[in-house]
Amino acid sequence: MIALLMALAGIFSELSLLAFGGGNTILPEMQRQVVEIHQWMSARDFSAMFALAQAAPGPNMMVVTLVGWRVAGWAGVLVTSLAKFGPSSILTGIALHGWKRYKDAPWRPIVQAGLVPITVGLVGASALLIAKASDHSIAMTAVTAVCALLSWKTRLHPLVLLAGGAAIGLIGLG
Amino acid sequence: MQSRASEIGAGAVEPPTALQLFTGFLALGLTGFGGVLPMSHRMLVEKRRWLSDAEFTDLLGLCQFLPGGNIINLSVAVGLQFRGIRGALAAIIGLIAGPSLILIGLAIVYGHYENNVTLQHVFAGLAAAAAGLLGATALKIAAPLRSKPVPIVIALLCFGAIALLRLPLLPTMLILTPLSIFAIWKYTS
Image 1 (cartoon, chains in turn purple, green):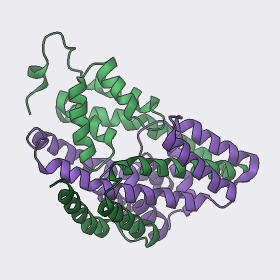
Image 2 (cartoon, rainbow over the protein chains, first blue to last red):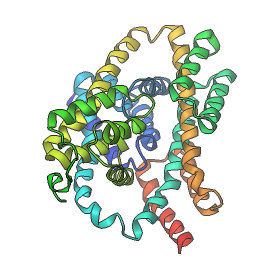
Image 3 (tube, rainbow over the protein chains, first blue to last red):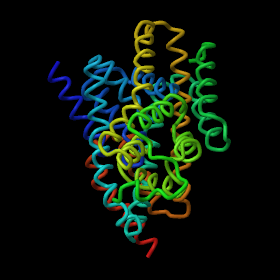
Image 4 (cartoon, chains in turn brown, orange):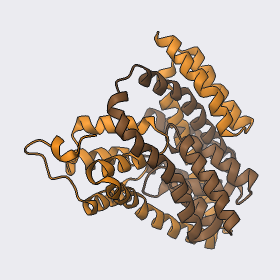
C-alpha cells in the first residue's frame, strides 16, 4: 500500500509541475502512467472517469481525485490531491511575489505564446486518447465529431453536449 | 507584495476572512459545471467584489502562465493575497472539497454498476462527447497559430509524440518548449 501511494505521489507531483496550459494537457501522460505503465485501470475505465469528472461540477482536473479513489480509496484521494495540487500551488505562491516585476517583462508574452503550440498538441492528444478508448462504433465517432464541431462553432453549454452524448449511448448506439 | 489592506481604496468591500474565502470558493466549486472560469469572474468581481476587473485579469494572467489548473491557481493566489497561507488553504480546499465528495459518491455508484451494459453505453456516449469537447478546446487554443507554419508544425510534432508515439511528457516538453519559444520569438522580432 505504501509503495502504491508513493507511486501515486511521484506521478501526480510531476504532472502538477508539467501542467502548463491547464489540466487537460497532462491527460495523455496521466493515462500513460495509470493505464499503460501501472495498469491500475483499463483505458475504457480511464475515459469513463474523465467523462464523469467533466459532467460533475468543479474545476477541470477532478479526474485526479477519481484516479486516486479507484487506485487506493481515501488514502489515494488524499495523496493524489496533495501531489497534484500542492506543487503547482506552492509555485503560484512563490510566483505571486515576483509577478508585479515580471508581468511587463518583454520575454513574458513570448514565453506564454511559445507554450501555446505545446498546449494545442497536448489537448489534441487528450482528445484522441479519450476518443480512442470510447469510440468503438461509427455512432460514437460521430458523437465525438459533432460535439467538437458544435462546441467549436456555437455557444452551446458543454453539459448539453455531454447529456446528448450520454443519451445517444443510452439508446444503445455505444 | 503590498498587503491588501493598503491597496483597497475607500468604498471597497472589506477583505474576506479565511471562512469567507472557504465558503466563496466552495460555492464556486459546486456551481461550476463544464469549467469554473466564467463563474469565477462573476463570484470574485461582480458578486463579492473581492477583486476589481483589472486585478482579476492580472491574477488570471499569472495563473494561466503557471502550471496547474487556472482556477486552482487563482484560488491559491486570491487566498494568499487576502489571508496568507491560511487563506490559500481555505480557498483551495473550499474549491475542491465539494466536487471531490460528489465525484467519490458517483465513483462508488459507478463501481457498483460498472459491468452493467446499459451504464457502459451511457459512459461510452459521455466519454465520446467529452473527447469532442477536448477537440474543440484544442481548436480554439490553436486560433492564434493560424498563418504561423512553424508553431503549427511544433503543435503537430507534440501531438504526434504524445498521442501516436506515446512518448513520456517530460522529455517531449523539454525538447519542444524551447523550440516553440524560439520560433515565436523569431516571429515577433
